[in-house]
Length: 97
Image 1 (cartoon, rainbow, N blue to C red):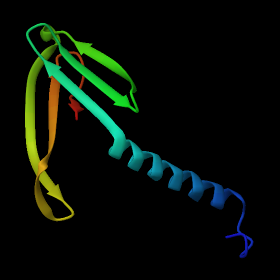
Image 2 (image 1 turned 90 degrees about the horizontal axis):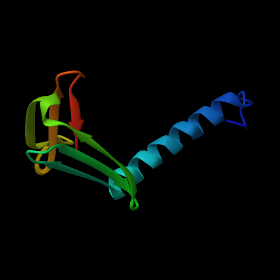
Image 3 (image 1 turned 120 degrees about the vertical axis):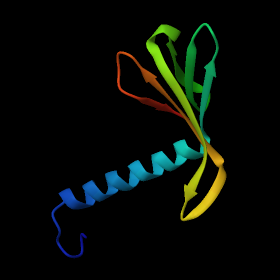
Image 4 (image 1 turned 90 degrees about the vertical axis):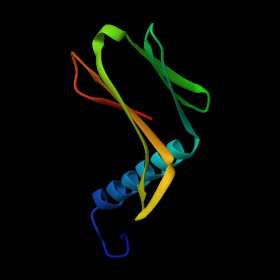
């Protein structure tokens, strides 16, 4: 881009986008999500290299919990992916894992 005398804005924009893609890829490879559901609460913990945050949702705030195992990745059906979603009475649908 510099050889074609493009404005400096474009290389910065494309570099930032590329960096975002790399960070998302690293998070996908080494990030970890733990979802625990019991009678006391629904606990969600998201960690990255051992550091992370936790959220706890009281059972009275949850209206439904649905799970999904499997999916399609690059046109190929896979059974190793999974997801869980909880619908809260006071907020829109939240998807975990």
